[in-house]
Length: 279
Image (cartoon, rainbow, N blue to C red):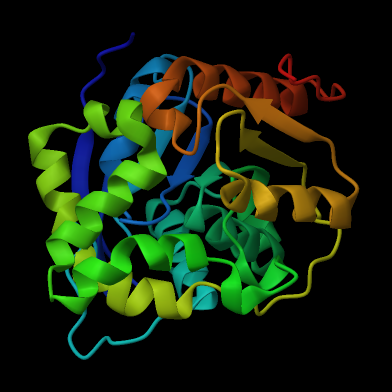
């Protein structure tokens, strides 16, 4: 693993102050986090790739080290994609490859379709897109049932901790450092009060993207977490790639994520048809 030190800074983007980390040197890759919005989950992947690529991760607005903008009470996939686009432009790294996970997958898809000139290629893993479900209102019912008892008694921290265990699995949960766990549990109000209400509906038409797109899912992810990937692959007539582990392989299987990124970016660089090497 390459232990290249990270650049840690903030950028004024789209009316928000976005904390980001940048490692390595070479073609740029932007990693977009899902629920809990913490860019620290990408550290191992970034260190594995930093010998060849510049890897950028960031805390989504209102999460962890990106403060909540004054008066900000609602969000949308368009706003979140505009944050990603603004960061790419602020850092001067476009067009770049993107790897996006979970709710980040919905953000990455919106970015890809809204601002294709900023995206070189995209990999979406377990994109959570409620509006693609046959019954969007029930798409996240499993998660709501898990957190409802905690919310009913006003225990947002307990709700967040339980969600982290469900979404990350016990293996992924165990990979979180105490500092990162504290940050992510501290994101409960933003996640439960803003993100969950605003990030379920696509506002862009799903059409064949202008750049290469890979859609992946976790081999051990729950069905409701892979539904978006399966439906998106069907709509766009794409092969669905399977990665080892569950919903957050960047924590549990960073080498597999890094290898997929290397193969995908390398295939595009050499004009080759993409062969994932995983099934």
